[in-house]
Every structure is written in C-alpha cells, then in structure tokens.
Amino acid sequence: MTRQSITLAKQNDEWLKNQVAEQEFNSKSEAVNYLIKQAREREEYHNYVQMKINRGLKGGFAEKQTREEMLAEFKKRLENA
Image (cartoon, rainbow, N blue to C red; front, side, top):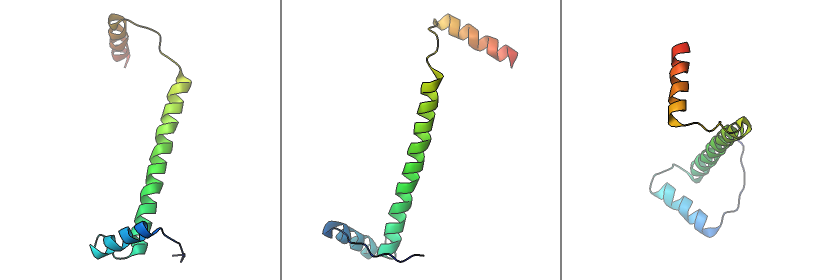
C-alpha cells in the first residue's frame, strides 16, 4: 500500500478516532480505505444508472396506446416467442 499524509478537519479526525475506539475499524487507515471504497462503489452505481437513463432517453417515447392495444401487443409477442 502507498503511504499518504492527509490533513483532516478536527470533527472528521474525532469521528475517525471514535470509530477506532468503538472497534468499528482497527485503524484510521482502515476506516479511510473503507470510506473511499464506498464512494467508488456509489460512483460506479451512479454511472451505471446514468448510462441506463441515457439509453432510455435515446430510445425515444413509445407510441400512445390504449390498454387494450397494449395487451394485444403483449399477447402477440408471447405467441411469437
């Protein structure tokens, strides 16, 4: 692992100390690594959701259908499957 030196706001340092004292983490480094991992996972999920939204927007809008027309289309698709 790479060693880093960071400066923390007092309240963040106190929070990290409390996490270690309460044995949530073995060290401040472990807590910081965990938090960074969580942020990266959230970013990956956000990017995935945004990709799905963009794909949906590019797909355009479906034509307006009545319930009956929609049901008939679904049944036809099922018969052809």
